[in-house]
Length: 89
View 1 (cartoon, rainbow, N blue to C red):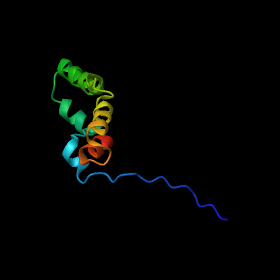
View 2 (tube, one colour; view 1 turned 135 degrees about the vertical axis):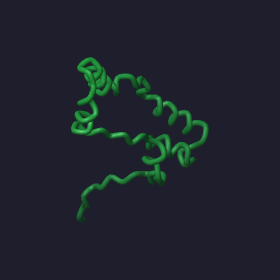
View 3 (cartoon, helix red, strand yellow; view 1 turned 90 degrees about the vertical axis):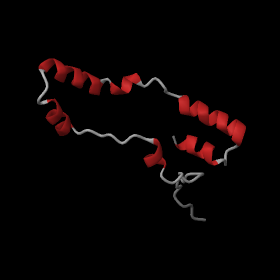
View 4 (cartoon, helix red, strand yellow; view 1 turned 120 degrees about the vertical axis):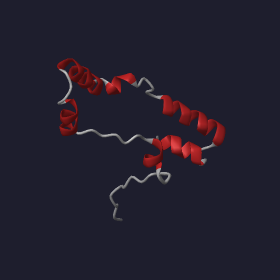
């Protein structure tokens, strides 16, 4: 008997256009940031730099989608499209 390599596969398919419809896509490169702050005063440039560095700290919603998914499973079931969407979020 030959054992094949284990391959992980998703149990459900990702909803179409999930990324496009549910996530913001604003990516600023270091070069773009440098060009943006070139004309600013040192104080304004420092504020812009701090805003970029601290951007992720303002989002205190860690675990929120996990809770939403748990409730959706309980209320709607695993195969409901809304539950699947929350699972991928």
